[in-house]
Amino acid sequence: MPISPPTAVLATNVVVFTIRDDLLVVLLRSRPREPFQGVWSLPGGLVGDNEGLEDCAVRTLRDQTGVRGVYLEQLYTFGRPDRDPRGRVVTVAHYALVPPAQLHGLDEDDGQRCWQPVNELPSLAFDHDRIVAMAHQRLAAKLDYSTIALQFMGERFTLSELQRVYEIILGEPLDKRNFRKRVGGLPCIEQTGDWFRAGNHRPARLYRVKQPGRVDIIK
Amino acid sequence: MPISPPTAVLATNVVVFTIRDDLLVVLLRSRPREPFQGVWSLPGGLVGDNEGLEDCAVRTLRDQTGVRGVYLEQLYTFGRPDRDPRGRVVTVAHYALVPPAQLHGLDEDDGQRCWQPVNELPSLAFDHDRIVAMAHQRLAAKLDYSTIALQFMGERFTLSELQRVYEIILGEPLDKRNFRKRVGGLPCIEQTGDWFRAGNHRPARLYRVKQPGRVDIIK
Image 1 (spheres, chains in turn orange, green):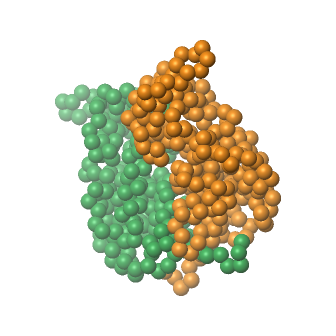
Image 2: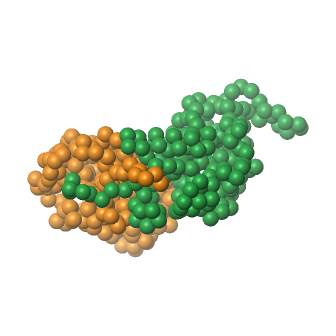
């Protein structure tokens, strides 16, 4: 290593997705200080001296928003030299998925925190708009080859509810028969034996995830 | 920002893949200095003050190995606090794909540089074995939902040659009919109108990529 190599401040940011009112929404936080004081931004913070990157993402998410115990994955590292007016700050972006059923107490918007539809975001601090766009793209792509959408489901769900989650993320309707052929037989979900009944509708089978928290690649 | 936030040294490393002797191989470099002097490692280096992350990956790859103008993509950022004995060094890992046809002058192994089969790697410096493993995993996964394998093909190729590339990366044989159904109709490749003829074999159609360098997501 040269005598004094260039250094950078390390940060993490987290794009937290959930589904609310039939929309894919992202958790935003009003920045408490300069730069961009009062501007909406992603939760995040500086990585501690002896802290892992994902540990930092988990910690800042918990401390700033109360979200914990959810699926979280590294997304991409953003390091354009001019992305922060204070100097070289590189952020290791992550994304997290919160099942709507776990939103109790997190779903109240206040002046410091709000959920915004991913397609109707206000102007964000730094390059956070690019981070959200990439996270949305990654999530949508992963629907096609993994079981990531199951992270949004509650303990028991119907295939119609699961299909609706896919459609909300992709922003387009899916063919019911193709969807069921592809997803209904996944080995990571199983029928509970119970049925969901609503009014005069046909009863619908209720499913559950065999190993919650696990995301499989599907072929 | 706190008065003096923790800082880190930023590096990049590149996992360079090509196909040689029917094997997926990775470019290794003998480390010229401590730590791990003389140990095989991935090409890479420290990110300059005003340098973008990908720019650094491209530069160090070119300077250390002569590889240039190839497909390159950010993979994952490795930042365990103890991954480098010198202190906090975070590496933004990338991977690159070199078509075997472009290997002229790069395919000579010497004491400083060598290509090693991805499944028979020597012990590598730092956490570079984990980086290679993740890059291989990502590449194999992307075969299934993108046109990334085309990055390995020459100007003109047969579908049998393309199938062989898939099989080498995945480490398993594929069904010829299914492969052709899936790949033969991709809009990003086209028939050249010419045929490959060898001995008494049936002539095979020659294909080319419409937009070299571009990787599409396929559904």
